[in-house]
Image (cartoon, rainbow, N blue to C red; front, side, top):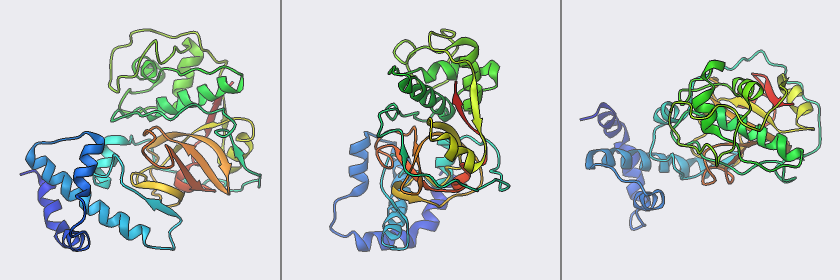
Length: 305
């Protein structure tokens, strides 16, 4: 028997008893989840996933019943994973979030590049640790939208071809290193080099879409200054993001492990486009409390020029 299954079985009995008592006679939410996401497992694995799902469902319902919370949780594609499994499968360690960050912020009105039509659609990185590539293409696609050109650029090319710049494919990387690749070689389109969600050998170097370099924005004030003129590629701690559904998130840890696209400051919160598909969060977006929430200001944000 898997060690994880044994541990989950031991620690979940009381939680599951409460779950079955409160959900007696109701539709099997786990079976509904399987149907929605088209997932199936061998019997032992399915039993383990059901335990985790139902434990997570209890946590979601308890959280959402607490009126003091500023955000809501919900069931999504990650609901069959523990927090630890989620981090190991979908996040890539990028270092500790610095606490020595200038959190001074110039007060500005709402800035929302998404509502202005200057942010491309939400994509899905799958189980490849390529968030850095999606963050890079996201900021590049906004760069071109602001210039008046709509294009979907190739994350897979960055995954396969930007190792000389220091990236590690599905094992992680940095948006700034991806932009260095684009500066040196250019990048091609999604249709010319489709996303496979796995490491491959480089098939085609470079492309027609090029940049002169990129600008860095440091600290929270740097982000609020920069967001006035363009979306910004940033890095965050997303350890606790898996059950997020809506609202202003503030439940963070201190390890930078995910790259995303900052698209605005709306209603006193950072508005961020993620790369986990539209079934997660607010149609693929999350709002963070302003300041250095989840380490969003800890590393310099970048934008092409």
